[in-house]
Image (cartoon, rainbow, N blue to C red; front, side):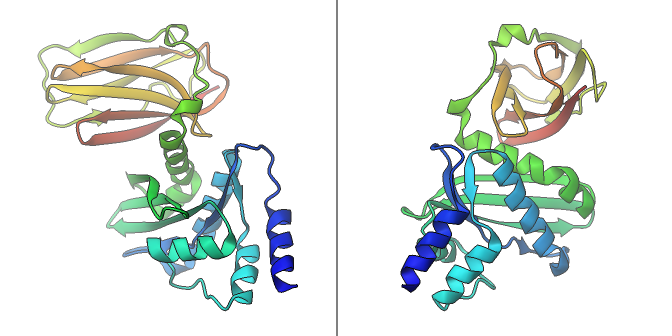
Length: 266
């Protein structure tokens, strides 16, 4: 009877809105050095909410998780390892588990999350975001950003992008004589914008540079650039007439460098 109740509870709490959704549960984020433990509940709840709003997951609520695990004599407290996540996922009957951490060193904050397949025990997705910002900024914007990166890295094949030519990007060097010291991607200017904005990025050495635009649900909107760059300072003018109003993320990858900035279309 107990098992029947648990099964029914799980079904009720995870009624799918789409057949392609993956059933997941979220472990409490680990608050590492520099982050007060009092933030754990709020940050974990926000992560759970952001994952739900992507539309890609059926997310089990924490209260339901605790009730099911209590029935089986298991305590969630201190469960942060991949092995523990898999064990919890097996008891809950979900397909994947989400775990992660938030840390701070001085003014630098970082949030890292990983997606673990319950059946294989393998990490199937992992992303992190670092910023020189406050913990409040993590709550306000960075949680959305890291979830967008995580879902995009696992669902690029579901891209809803328009053909790149409809975005009408154009490239022009800022100054041929400047060789920057480090890779960098700067925030769009202006931001927010109505019709167009420009981004500047630095390439200190010959490298393949990939720049993509994602929406807040992690869907690939456009690949701005994917080519070998010589050292220099580059600028792109982005025509946003094909974009709906809203928040987007521009992600640049080059060698071991990775950076994401936010873009808002009015």
